[in-house]
Image (tube, rainbow, N blue to C red):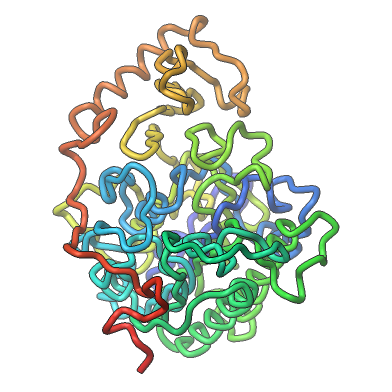
Length: 477
């Protein structure tokens, strides 16, 4: 085996050494709405997360890892290696029976790995379109078990608008269609409160079964929990277990799920062959904590888009380390492709980069020099190094201060409390030039020439109609 020796005597594994050992397995665990400081490795003093604590002790924290402000754009970013506005140019998120979704022409990480002989599965939430043309099996996944979108996108009478133990309202004629649990393109059931409560356990069992069934060949598992998104439904063994309420209960159940996945890898003697990345799809809500970051999900403050991320691969990733290099969801595709020995598509822009040198702790490894913060179709901020220029604040457009540029030094002021634009006009000018350079690519607002085509279908239909009947072609066999 060939190694590269990093600073401070840490042994790090080169891409050459990884390739020499054969194609590794990949697991990406994506939690829904988990806050930056909701887990022990990132500062939580409330939620007990022993398995993630151990994962961080054995792995590497990424402390400047970026997603998007909300669900669908973040997941598109992960799947395609591109800024959300480039691959899924929508103003917010996708809803049930939406006529648009991630285009089947997109080349996802699942398609790349599938074409290289990997078994591919997504267990959990998809949220990139619920029409047949947009579902996971059309995007490179051999197997899907889970929900097509968020667990709140169902009728109130089914518990989709209220958390565990809260009274269910009477049915409404104009409510959202029933929430479907899918196995590939079959609707298994209409999701009720008891199904929400069993979700983490069922996902974990499905993930373990997939790992065990594919232990003799390379696999890619995308474990996309619906937890800890509202409504809150911790499992029966977890509800009331923490002293801090339903949200903490569910965070702790998710931690246990991660522990079961990592234990399975150890038991199956797959740990040294498997890269596991743990992350969140966007910043946390007011139910959790993003400290010391400012803001919450839905914003381009750091608390809306910087997410707690851990990379784990025993003997390949240096244990108990961290990196503050600028990285993000769009780096997952080029990194996994490189480790698998796959080539990236050359007919489209991939905004991400191979960050294996950062994960491996290679001396002088660099992340991105620049990161653009898009909220839907609108560019609201840009970061270069430690400097962040907020060009349009995430507040109401009728606010007189909306378009006043503000400058923050994230190294000395991670909480974005002190606008230092007046003290550093040269930095403001430099970052404004970056904004201008993006004008002819993804632009500042609205449609852009650098965006790829959305998938679109005529006459979209819900997978379960409001009368409870299942869409033809999705009925249980």
